[in-house]
Image (cartoon, rainbow, N blue to C red; front, top):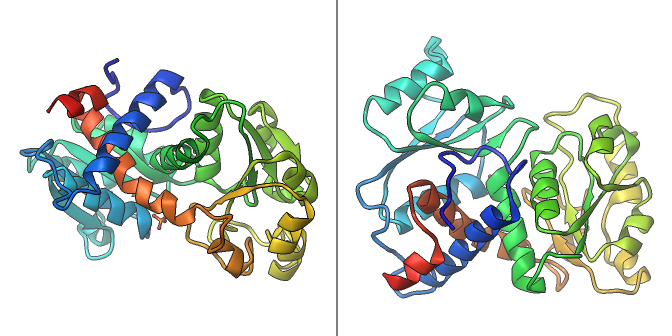
Length: 314
Ligand code: CP
């Protein structure tokens, strides 16, 4: 199957075949990353610009690494120190960078829809690295890859997304991606952090954490996005941890095997007990490792690559 999309803006509307192609391709690149020289010439001659208007550790570094591992030329743009401070618009910034002959743009922006907007301003392929509260598709894909590595299939898996659903782009990408792959999804958090639109997402909704723990094979634990929240959505951080914080004691009470994901950054002692984040339950660092392979796969497929069979034939 060929990957027919020019951009990766969201997982909403993605098919099982498209997601499987990305994940299978990522597995081939994961093998490349274990070699003594973890680099292939696949994107030699291509230029990628990383436009980050919001802070990032994992996503920015793993896109940069993915580009280097594929032998692309890459350039990094951060909002601070740019001509945005002199009043230049996003459109003008992107068009000026494109005039320097680039092939792909990776963008993180606080405004939902900024990557879609860029598709109308420039000819380059656009990859969404997180836009406001909308989506974070490569995070969703690396979460799917991590679960598929562990469970072999996503079909029939019960994944509970816990915490601040309302402000989370990771939650949206996970819901669309997991459902496309046949997993069942539940949301759990205080009612004030579950948006009204969740009723249309086809998920279970649990307001009590113990009910979600009883139901789930996997917990995807989210950070409270305090930078995006209005005040007064829950009484205090301490109260939130008491009601929704994931602790070893709570997991052991439900007497079954549960796998924990977290997109990072973690607020230890708030949404998850610090020790548990590093425990045998956790696949958090596997997610980070898979992030490089997934981003290599996305960059390669959007450049016209055909997938893992072509890579194996090389
Ligand atoms: N998961 C994630 O997007 O992390 P960063 O904000 O560090 O990129």
